[in-house]
View (cartoon, helix red, strand yellow):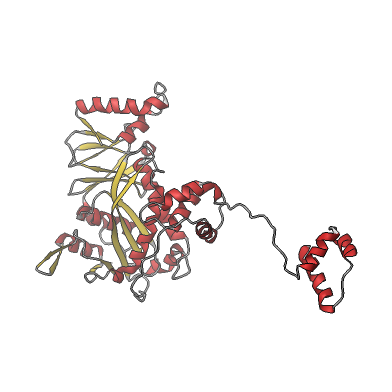
Amino acid sequence: MERNLMGELNMYRQSGTTPNFSEIARRYGMDRKTVARYWRSGGDLEDRRKERVSGFARHDGVIRAKSLLPGITKRAVYEFLLDTSGEDLPCYGAFTRYCRTHDIPFGAAARREAHPRFETPPGRQLQFDWKEDLRMVDARGEVFEFNVFSATMGYSRLHKFCYAPTRTLDDLLGCLLETFKFIGGVPQECVTDNMSALVTTSNGRRTRSDRAQRFAKEAGFDLQLCAVRTPQTKGKDESANRFLRRLLAYDRDFVGLDGLLAAIARIEARSNSEPCETTGVPPSALFMREKEHLRPIGNLRLLQDMVGQVSEQVVPSTMLVRAAGRQWSVPRRCIGSKARVVAMPGGQIRITVAGELVAVHDSTRGSNPINYTEEHYMEAISSKARFSDEDIREAARANLDLLDSLGGDRR
């Protein structure tokens, strides 16, 4: 209404006549002195609209706390708020504007050398790497030190992220096989850097692992190593590693290994469903075109045997499965489900249910026949009526101590 009034006053001003302030005030339902003030202002209209409260204002404390985490990005914190707030938040652009106007810095991006993008045909290439030496603390104060295997299809940019406690060749081959089963085939070549699990260097010469070469031959792909100190040759997966920085936003906001694995799975699903900045298409959608160009996986049973001893078991009510002559715990939700248990040569026990990694144990630690994690044991006794919520952790530790004395082992 005020803008209509200013337009009318400008018409009087252009015609060189003085308006009847009382008549105009009556028509616009305003005071005569207000109309006169607008006339004397010369047409400058002051916007007195109150500043609306941002949808991020109530999360200001969380945003500022997360912005202090090493290596954190605005996108990572925004995705964390989407997952945890339960609210219909404004868009990402509004979030960056809120951080800018409220002086919430996330650090300046380092100046980078230019590296032109190199595209590959569908089904040609998969790039993989490690996100190394991650350290996170859950809501109960338990510290998790781990790595994440990151793989990206060259054409569609489809991502696969796998949790791994170490970066041994056992871990690497297990994660590659998990990736091939996830994408339903094998690309022509897999590209990575000179990671220690694959390559030993002596007098400037690189020697590839025979076991890795045999695995590549049986699976049906060529293993390619990028040149030393040129990570841009696998830049699509280096870009995928940026997605994993979102994981830092979950620090102290997850519970146990189950919560950590669930956070990694959510980041993977979101990474594959949101449009890629380069292609403009979600990787999961573009992968439908790439999938038909993949080679079939080689002898799957042989590949599994090369990774480790594989068995399939139905999880009993004790929440224990057998591997390497001992028993290992899984989450309570797995009871009655069929679990795939892989005992790797290096001693790692990886347990998956319905394609989801649910537990990882290390058989080189201790020699006891029964091995529960404290988290899994707490789940088991939480349904017992005689334990209150406050007593569950104390009771779990007491029972595990007793189990230790009888030959069991906690993790």
